[in-house]
Length: 53
Image (cartoon, rainbow, N blue to C red; front, side, top):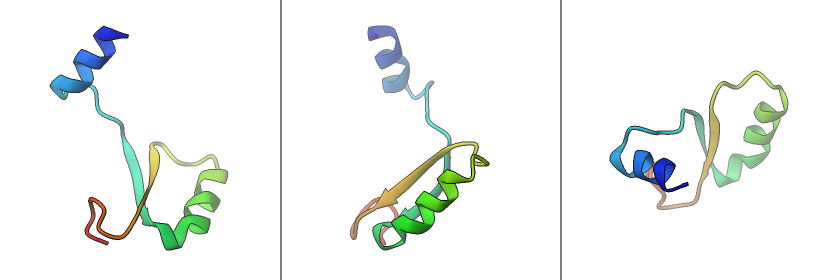
């Protein structure tokens, strides 16, 4: 587990983000996830989150 944490801390291990949705569109994100056609993570943001939404 320490080896994985070290990779993440160094930036060598990063998740693939498929799409970012504001919290208000959680249903849309969920529907996309249910299709089993995504290749990465789906991210929900709250007002003031990383995307500035």
